[in-house]
Image 1 (cartoon, helix red, strand yellow):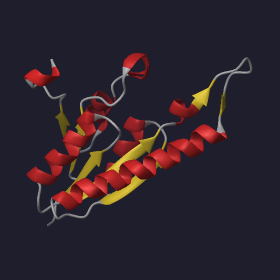
Image 2 (cartoon, one colour):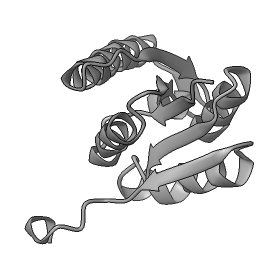
Image 3 (cartoon, helix red, strand yellow):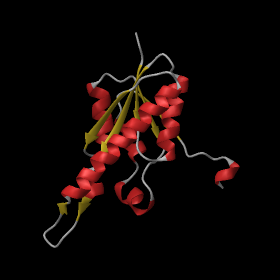
Length: 149
């Protein structure tokens, strides 16, 4: 039976490291790459409680497409093809749901993809995935090499 691996992919270095890890560690697996387009990232607030910008949403879809093309390009470096998809919703919930819906055996994701204040306000996606995932999860931490310090 072929192992099915899900890699959560965003613009972070950790997500790129997670994809490289999955491709190099599981060369015979079927690799799924998922980018979650979270509406909270293209939502603004007004005095009436909130709105979203259609223009921001369109930009986020274009960005997601570029990210998935990047993931496919990285996979090509390993002579591998990936199933690359995008979802709209809460990142942790979308990752776990995708895993359940596609009989994913293992999830690989970066330790965190969000930066700054939003990371603290939204909580840790990786932590929520670990708690809710029906299967095993590998979290790739930030590179601790001396050049990053």
